[in-house]
Image (cartoon, rainbow, N blue to C red; front, side, top):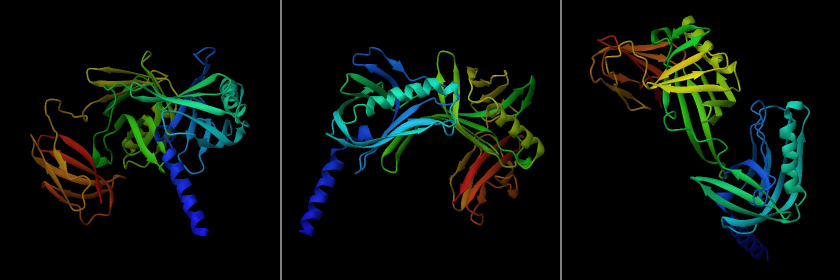
Length: 389
């Protein structure tokens, strides 16, 4: 009898798992609007760029059929949402589900009048499910220019429209690695320091359409990542506006370590504050002669190029450095120049070793990230991060 019970449990578990629609459950969905069937009486998600830019829904592919939803939180102690358990009824892109239980979440102690529009929307959104939680909800997944959209309908003739990508997709001409060349702060132009011997690395900016594969087996996110790295690191997700050529930054995180030189430290702090002191935006941008120019709300500018800043624009200096990561030897091949000095630094700007040969022995170094600074016979510098494993 015990074996029969285990067998039946296994069969039910298998049927449940195979019945899941991974296009439905292996995503985080972002709410766009609530409307009557056919699009009438549509209420769009309000865009509060300061506090609540998004409302999200997770439908997890698990035995419990867990579902959760809330504001995309940019403010602590001010959110609404729900958690529930659900039954999925089939595995097609056209399907249905019903709730086993439904529990609302509310934490509004830090909300203020600026949050009313989002809070009112969340009340309407939660009621869409809660008021009909004993009924069956139909859903349909629709591909819109390569991005999945989810339409859920309740028994009262209303629908919710959601998307796996809450952002406008970033154009290809900006989604790449950029190198900071200079800043203009309060009208004062300052070139990015390019002297690693004083503990400074080239500042790199990555603007990416980022696709994050399964997290814990059931979650897929599509984000836009705004990431910069030098002596410090900072990253954020952002909302892009083609029409105004502006973007807003959210979930900004930054870590700052000493660059090893006062000039470099001051520049790093100034550059980080160029963004940090003007969140969430809007920052404007333009691409002019292969330069990316970002302007903050006080008209300060950060100017980037597609290549590492060089003091000799007439020289092409693109050495091959490999392998990266390395466990023992690093090989350096110059194209137009000859090696003068190669210096290895820690990420804190400490000089580790120097050489004038094209083969560098990393085998004795502790695992981690190092900075390689190459000076050539023509006075050119090239800086590269190398990982020792």
